[in-house]
Image (cartoon, rainbow, N blue to C red; front, top):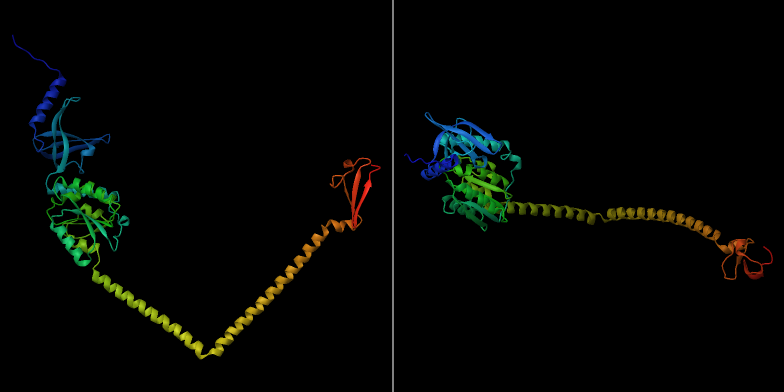
Length: 389
């Protein structure tokens, strides 16, 4: 009798994925041409990777895609082979995709540059000027490199006395972009006048860390003015295009960051001479005025006497007008106060009647028979009794 063994479809797929995972070395990459590139629901990227004789499906989350990918592009895919249980489909689950060869690298870089340019990251209007006299600078690069040595040497020759905080990072290789981005973010927490990023020359592939999209966006987001010099003068990376100021070499970077003290001293000397000449010119003008005043005192005195006389006449007229107006107003107020004086009314034959409580009586309703009242006249008081109402 044959001994038969059974397993479920799920168990079979799980076993196959375990075998594939154990047998596949993640340091390997599959190289081929992209075909049928598509993005599903804005989250999942899939395409076919093919050569002349075979084809494999590639699948990955869109956030794992570090470079622009398009049909016809030749790439290397790092990932894990697996069977997706839901579809029973064999795929390569990608963790990283890189262009294959310098031609593809340049093609991908050109696509990324066009994307960043369309977003305005290279717009000259957003670029800031460097401070004229920086005191504290953040330097991102390799502190063991010749680029850093040249930078520090030129700074010392031209100006000196600055504080330079070095953020040591790898400047090439797969780990370099992540370290550079981390250094840029860390520098934002300090109080720096400028953020400098520099490295010496190298091959196209050596400089690719500074063509990384994440590095370019981190430089763009920096609150500190940025100065970037990568490679030789002919090399232009995305990091330099995004930076506020680009220098052609590390040496040029130092020259753009600080002035030459000899130039500044010359400017100060010229400015001092200009101020001296201006003061002497002012003194000469005042001296001329004084000389003319002393040489012609009678003219000077007549002029000022006329001014004083004119001022006195205007003052007298203004006072007379004011005094006349004040007198008229005072007379009007006096007549008004006289008309409201109770004694003036009493002189015309009127009197004031007060009750026993001393309060004035203004109506017959406030009186009663045989009530004692007081009459106030213009020249005195009299008492009386009410006999009829």
